[in-house]
Image (tube, rainbow, N blue to C red; front, side):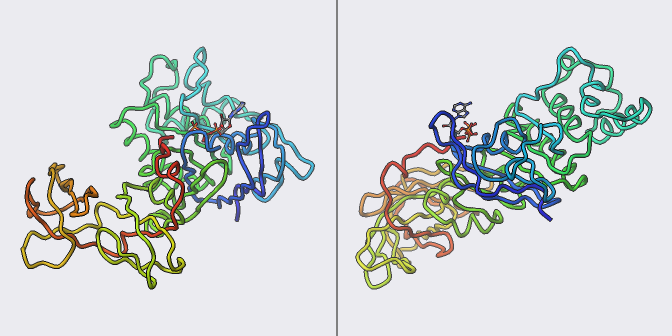
Length: 357
Ligand code: ATP
């Protein structure tokens, strides 16, 4: 069943469009990660669901019931929605236990205390109840924020860049803990992140936004392997960006002949190649387009190899194993067809658009 549904939601701030025809369902027990570049409307979607922003058009439902639209506009605390923000947003003058108990209304003292104790255990902070937020590390504060959001057992959890205020090591630790707890409580969770890898790690599904619209929703592996556009392909991972023209259903691209799918004859296309989809062979008689190795950076399990093709195009390849060619060496390139995507040419601004969130 749908824990959280957006139906045809459109929203603008003083004429600035932040969401357009936004349709998304997050089912009970599901984690959906909402990703996209800065300013594409991710936080607006969360704020509308939380009731922090009045809805202009469309409907938002929690557990199948309207909370915005359809004549309803429920207050944030009535919606059954828990919120976790990037900056933790704890009350500085309240002890940890009181921060957590803040949303627990209508319970007697003993029951409230028991629930707070249970939540502190759940987020791995037993015995922290009497501390104040300033006495905690960033990771601990974020765990308290999570406990506070979970306290009233909301059917929906909204998390806005919950780990981006933490350093890399803490981020992984708090993220894994959060993931485990979200699975345990079985709420519908919508997580905003600008980090595509984090979205693939956490999300049962990923919803990709671009300029106020959802452009693709699906399982992480589906989106990574079958991006709907060059934008999505680039957002989800590094690509080499080449060009070509469709002739007899194929593109004679700089790395070789690539199937053009149903793109029309004579059309200019973008050919995107994942670095891990390139294979290099240094044997003179090997088949493939010729290239010259410019640089080779060993990164542990993989090496990042920069190449110049005979036609002048530069590419990056991620190569595993011992047999990595050295700078100055001539090689032949082959590619995995699954790691190559062909799309009709888009304007250059899309190619160069910054993707950080
Ligand atoms: P980021 O990743 O940088 O947080 P975002 O994808 O969450 O971005 P939003 O914060 O939802 O994007 O903003 C979407 C658009 O709405 C942007 O153009 C932003 O400038 C605009 N916007 C957001 N909040 C307001 C506001 N309160 N008043 C006016 N414009 C706003």
